[in-house]
Length: 344
View 1 (cartoon, helix red, strand yellow):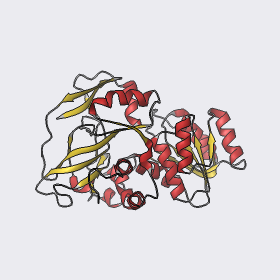
View 2 (cartoon, helix red, strand yellow; view 1 turned 180 degrees about the horizontal axis):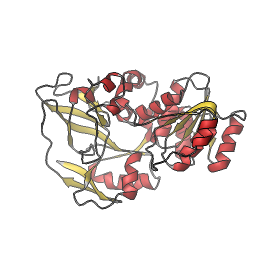
View 3 (cartoon, one colour; view 1 turned 180 degrees about the vertical axis):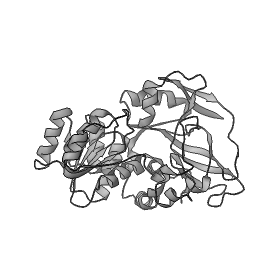
View 4 (cartoon, one colour; view 1 turned 120 degrees about the vertical axis):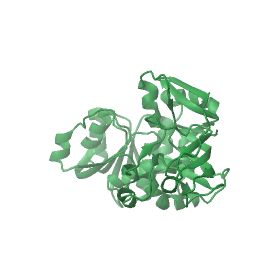
């Protein structure tokens, strides 16, 4: 089969690799029908050190189950399934608490040697706990939005939950990528009164407004902090969704939170230390979040997608086959595209 392999920063190739096979009785094999390039894939695309064997890429997919191991019970051959980015057994204490990204058997597709979903097929360990069957066919018109359940919609929702978004709250979203845009959807779903999107790209701002953003802040640094405070009566936002992961974005998120507010961090941190510990401390700002347990949120989010109440699939503004994946990375890296969907 063919798959996407990254060898170093900027070096993405489509190559023939061995077909996946059942290795454990809890495995399943899926034929990938939709995948995508995630904003977090751009971190290695911009900075990965040379790797002679390469890393298989991609951690979001919808697939059709082609084969199951002897112990798999909840999915069967022919099922259309969404594949969250984290492997989870579904039975451990953390999975039972809805924190599948802390599963005792956790793994992350497309990283640390694990095969990725920007490919024609993929082996799924712990299939019962990882895969989620969908009540649609593989060519359903809702595929783009359903694909977001594997990461960006669930991650945006996680940011909103960690930031304690609730009816009547004032919300700021730091970052106008796919996760930030889905964070706008999540804040709107949860009843936010005001939603400020912080970004500079006109196409993304337009989509954020369509999703429910009420205000836009395109400044950065101290100017951005001052502008958010002006828009929130001088106090700052009750809830801040940090969807980037850079030191500056994390600092801004903490500084624009009102005293007693909360920050939900879902941008993968690119620095070891969190900035603004003193402002967070002295303003009693709660800082939470982390890798989103998107598997836990599908039950809540799926009905709204099936009924058309939310359309997070609009974050995909480019679609192509595997051969177009290398250029898709380039397009996202230079901000020509918000999110690229792949149809292997």
